Image 1 (tube, rainbow, N blue to C red):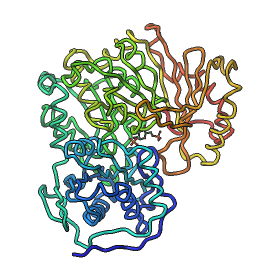
Image 2: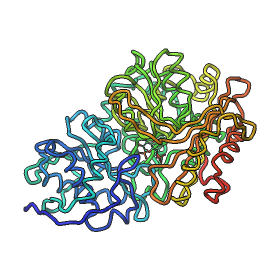
Image 3: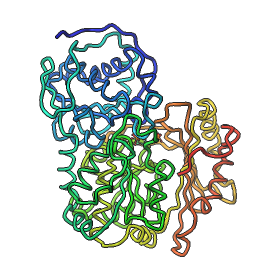
Image 4: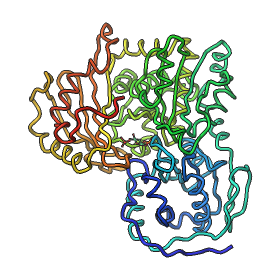
Amino acid sequence: MSLRRIATTPFADQKPGTSGLRKKVTVFQQPHYVENFVQAIFDTIGAARQGATLVLGGDGRFLNRQVVQTTLKMAAANGFSRILVGQGGLLSTPAASNLIRISGAVGGIILSASHNPGGPDGDFGIKFNAANGGPAPEDITGAMHRRASMLVEYAILDVPDLDLDVVGEVTLGDCTVAVVDPVADYAVLMRKLVDFDAIAAMFRGGFRMRFDAMSAVTGPYAKAILEGALGAAPGTVVNAEPLPDFGGHHPDPNPVHAAELMAEMLGAEAPDFGAASDGDGDRNMIVAPGLFVTPSDSLAVLAAQAHLAPGYARGLAGVARSMPTSRAVDRVAKALGIPCYETPTGWKFFGNLLDSGRITLCGEESAGTGSDHVREKDGLWAVLVWLNILASTGQRADAILRDHWARFGRDYYTRHDYEEVDAGAAQGLMQALRDMLPTLPGKVFAGLTVAACDDFSYTDPVDGSVTAQQGVRVLFAEDARAVFRLSGTGTVGATLRVYLERFEPDVARHDAETQAVLAPVIAAAGEIAGIARHTGRDAPSVIT
Ligand code: G16
């Protein structure tokens, strides 16, 4: 066995986005591309990696096994003394976050492009999570990018691949590699937070559920916990086997990409509860019989009812949501008398709030909800807390949601995505919007009057760091809002996201169709931003 130092040349495009470095598989397949970025991560960790523990795993997508092997050999060559890797190279993002926290690791490398499609023509990604278990903050990802831009050499052991399918410890150079059951520690954590006995009793009483793992990493977790520990009927979890191409599907848990689950939940024979999660298991989708629960509403319901789960029985310190997420959770926070923080899009912005104990729960419109149990959003956790609420109250999920609206009012909400738009055109649209901000207040669009508008800027209350230009928000006097931002996770061109919402306090009006209610807001947003003019599109590519 020998340690080799390989000469390389830097890649200019190794700049992490909203959540790590995410590119087409073909980009990662360029010689040295993976090695360069992994070395940049290790160099950024610096001397702290000597003798330290690293956590490693991914969502099982195409390239996962290969990149796990490369990373293991590089970690051993770069001074780590212990590496925890999920069996088969698998770890869901929340399980990896938990492992980092409980093992005292210096951090972890998670291989995932999340909800993006997989396979040889799909996407791949590498992200680094820090010692708190959370996505690396911007100063660290910035340092990685700078390091990657000047990298001329990486270190790797010249050894055969390890067998990752057998749980146990093996030696790799001066390093110990522990191949661990990816589910075990995560299941222990869930048992501490939610009332497994109450949920199991509900399943014994005939409660029926459908969980769509979308052929992604959550399958083994959902099988072990829902069907194993909680006794849900066999077959409750569908698409449970993680596949390198996710069975050709888009592993994004929303009504468009989880269409089969939606059809079942809206049908006459709907089970009592439906849920799905994404490629790496951090996102979730909740569907009540006959009623989709928007991620923003789900966050608000969880905030209002989390005290029913043992892990949250003492109440919540505070809550947070990303700026484009609806203001439903703000109303709950107000009623509970706890603070509610508004952060930029990206889970990394919740890290300081969670670490400092300012918040207990947080979430995003992009199907992410989580708590201070890890430092990532956690799909299966959200499903389990919902199940705990259903078991504790004995109510149906649709009744829970309707009661919530009756008490707090309903925030009608939709997101319109314009995918694979020309990047220059999308930048032009955003710049034009920013330029017109001073002139908008008081103007009327589609019958709605602009009350206020800005380009969202966030000052972190813990470390004082400022993150500017996080999306343009337009507030209308009619208690409606439109938000515009460009996605930070796409890999082709640019994706314009338009987030649209309107508050309706009157319970008699809570059963309307979302797109119809929001039609004036949609029209006003299109007019203000000149969407058709800039993008050449007359309709969004995805509406959720
Ligand atoms: C990632 C981040 C999320 C964020 C989402 C937004 O999700 O982890 O915190 O809300 O991206 O994506 P975009 O910039 O495309 O709107 P994931 O699940 O892809 O890791």
